[in-house]
Image (cartoon, rainbow, N blue to C red; front, side):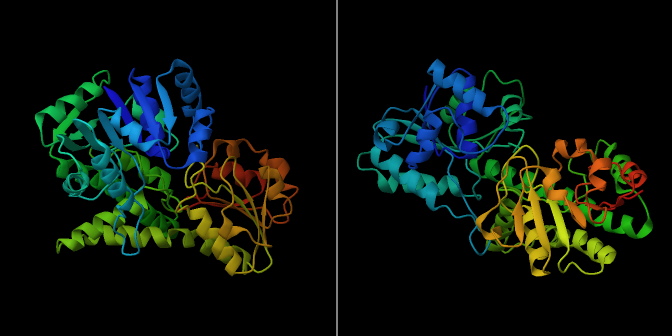
Length: 431
């Protein structure tokens, strides 16, 4: 099979490289000429551990190539993955304009049977829309199938997640499409769920919404732990050992972010609204998450009295470690709140860059955490980068104006920090 991946963002590039690693010949297509040139040179337009080495490997092997030539790419491909963005609209629904554009392009330029696969995260019923858009755009009648094959990639862990997945979900209306996709993944050792396209589309949203619910649940418990003087880490360990619950996504903190959870929970709610169904639990999940970063700010106000003219060091911009993604990152909201309160902010992140909306006279991006911490009245830890555990905190304490640590990810040892002489507070976690 000749495989085309349309869209060379995070999902598209990862999908293309993993398929190349599985032995298939893959073409990556994008309308962004600068992005394609970067990929052709062996560089990624985003940060993801392990992917750049894989890119260089398969550019050299010839298993992967990148192009901006839409017509030729479609004509030469048998299987086409749609991996374009589906950003949130103002009402929370997914914007399918890019999916529609790809479907129309395929319809106009197809020259024989094509299996079209939605890899983008899309609302229930999108497979039917893509089928209609392809038919509307066809100038000559050619057979095709449209299937759903959602991704379950964690940013920062995309490569192991793709090479050693928990499951592969295939939503197909025809046996032929299901068999083709099953053959594509035949070398992967994991369960394969073959179902309808609508079910596959809902599985993706339901999975992310459930994980977001676990995060908001433990964050709510953390607030109670703060009041009761209980360590939320021990609570999470105690309940996480129950196999019906599991330990993943039970790490209390300042809330979830990124390109998936916020967007997907909102889109699922919008789908429910369109079908006159209330998902009240998910409404609360969103509400809890939106307010969670304020819990850390409240702790700082209680300790410092006022944040006006206080120098606050923010360690971590990305919404999670091992990625440069700052979309919906709690750190961004915290910095905005600090600026509203007239604080002076210094920021460090190993890979993520300060977004344009945070370029401000009172915000200083720093090359090292030590530079950010110098003269600070407090430090907010917003991303649990491992390198922050290895800071020489005992030495750094001498260079801070006031040794306060507000750990939004509960990553440091509370007792050790207190022994060094810091005032340390986490989220539902203190010594």
